[in-house]
Image 1 (cartoon, rainbow, N blue to C red):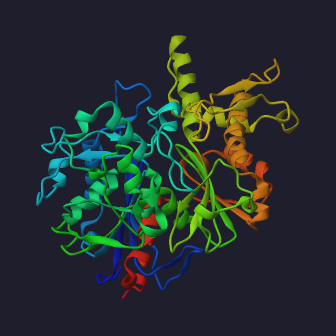
Image 2 (tube, helix red, strand yellow; image 1 turned 135 degrees about the vertical axis):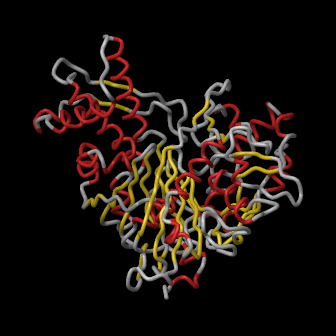
Image 3 (cartoon, helix red, strand yellow; image 1 turned 90 degrees about the horizontal axis):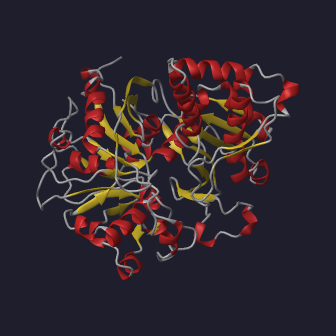
Length: 493
């Protein structure tokens, strides 16, 4: 490859792993139809790395879910350092995405520069909280009911950044006094890379916290302040198509002055990297599960009416270029299947022998695929909502219609896979796609692309063409968004 390429570094800081990639700049993307055009090698992924963060930590808070931020940042450093140094020198833009909803707090004095080498140390000298993730459910329905209602078209659930900060303000106000800033972990990274005194958060991510006017890129400050919310901690909100600054010092060979985009939502980046046309929907099943399509130009969630045919379970995510995604987002996806496999493994240990999880996955999928077609109608009915759902948090998993003929491992695992898809289909049924002229589903996500059972159940539930792909990597989507955040890179030299 020539040495004068313009490259984009794409970063995704996910719930369980960090992914990074180097992509040749030059692809033009559109909110309506994904990737539109490009010349030569533009859009080609030249290198990529990924690594599990193993960042979950124990918490004494009932229903809390927290992660160790230095571990996450150390994993990011590990991934970047394993990319080819000669390619890193050609990076002209850094695009980031990451897990939405979560919040980390830290103390930063005026003029103080944050340093990755310090932040990723176990004994980090910066006063910093754990990352309270989107899986955190410390906010009970009763607690949430006492919060001020967000603006029309917006919601606030447990695990959302503003809900978590409300909880801390009401239950641990002394803890908040230790900190000067709050943001997502990917916003912390952009603040560190650009030497920002105050973090900047994209509209996409801010909407995942709640209490934001997405159209005007502004928090509902008066409403929050009146309710006792610590508004001093809030980051600045910027439009998702903006860069927030540039590198203030070299980073693993990437030169000073390289532009850095505002950190985007991981799901929006997955959609951007997957979408092929305006009539496509995008399905992602990894830790959780989401299915979405791009709403028409001019749609505003605060003035939406019943003509859309969308259920109360559907959320509206800010996308790009003023457009919105209609999203059915389930907390229960690949994590429900993984819980079942861990349960099987624990049973084998209880019986006195050990079977690796990889072997259990392989056997469960194979046995599920072997269930005869005439037996599939008599499968058990599984509602896989182990974690509830945001719109109905008190839901729990239920198994019914068990009989002696359907209790084999293959039959039960197939029923569970069907339940994961059925749960999502109940939130966004096929009829919605028909109404909005969606003609194809593009499916991705680690749990979906590795599991033929899930793929078969998606095709059976939606009864429309389904294309499965591994291209929906949020790090690639974050890199492709460079054509929106840094228009000069729409053509590679």
